[in-house]
Length: 241
Length: 392
Image 1 (cartoon, rainbow over the protein chains, first blue to last red):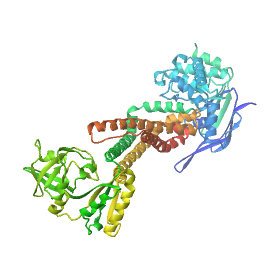
Image 2: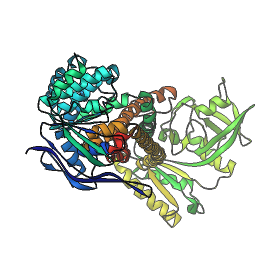
Image 3: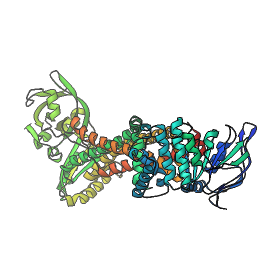
Image 4: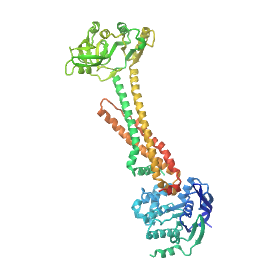
């Protein structure tokens, strides 16, 4: 079995005053390469912490985490940064584009940190933007783009580094329903093209676009179900266009 | 990431907030421009001093009688015997009565009265504007005659010809026999322009001055300078029975002493300017800390997509260095402009720009940016991505 994510007994606690909060209580989760997993749960369930752990933005107190076969425990900050850069593409709810840079430059950013030359960087960024239908908007600043367009740029940025894993945290949370559907369709397409996708949401309707839904509550996985049928078909029904 | 890309990135971030950037730079701008200007003024003063001594010739020796020697009087005629030696060209012993009241009709002021002989004018490279200088006879007959410096003449005789008039020095009448040309420069602290020159013995007797205090000696040629100095030392040591009673200074030493005095002052001013440069650096640190807390989210985004600590550190370090070196560059230009403008406003204040000092000041400002940027940049680089992303 070729696994992209292998989480074993991940524990994460936070100290708030004298109180110890158990955010993740021994979570184990495996995600296969090419899969599309939605992690759902109410706020405070620990799904954001889980997503941060998977995204290597936060380090668990105990447990092991293998990403694309690489053991991430005891890695240095720099090692984690390099792994994030090479293996993970983030899609955030708030897009998290740098406001002073143009769309094109935002897409180039991860490639700057992986040391790709200026010319190749620009070419690749243009190709990805083109693929997402944003080729014409490369020279616009994020503030000159609509929410949906900004999220497309953010997805382009996530794709540009050719990551093994796409990590989407409430990607439609700041978008209206029509744009949400478009962005979701885009994510489904990316999965069909072979990208492994982990999507975090509190909205079951959005989660239903995935192949597999993992529900987390009070820091524990309470259900893990695989959906029937290709996600693209179900999406077509939902958007009906 | 290449350096040029880092600099471009830093420039864009800096230009995003031009007003703040200029305010941040202000300390460095003031620091660098004052260093450049003060050095230019200091070097200008040095050039001026050197120029003053240049046209005097280099074979002049000044012998000063110090406090311990005053008990033993130097006799004018004894001293003048030294002139017969081959290595000595001319001698002008002097007595001084500084800040003497000199009066003509209703015009009155304080001037330096110098009692000396006929050689004095030539040795000071002075020239007559009208009338004549002292001659042998004036000394011999202890005449009450006076030669006026150009400024003395214009003060006492505004719009009038002083020749043949009678001035009173400390209440005693002197006939004005000549007026000297404007010289501008000062030698050993005495300006020819503001002096009144009278025969030596006349001055000694009239103003009851004890000993000859300063003697100007001209070596016969430049090559005789050392020999002349040796002879004078021997003679004065014999006279005073000690080598502590007098001091000999030649032209170079005189000039160096004045240059040293002027550069001490300049150096002190420059150190104050350097302190303002350091204060400018602290200003940069302050603003960088503010910038970083404002851009915490940006740092989080950059880290989440793969920026390493080194990338963030370098980004903010370059930003601080670019701010300070831009400030340095502006300060350098401002300093050059000031150094150019000062002589136009005040012609007496010469300036001389020196390229290397400008470059050092500029490099120092860049260094200040790096040193004071280090702490904020390090702080930014240590932010955990998760904390930085959560920040709003």
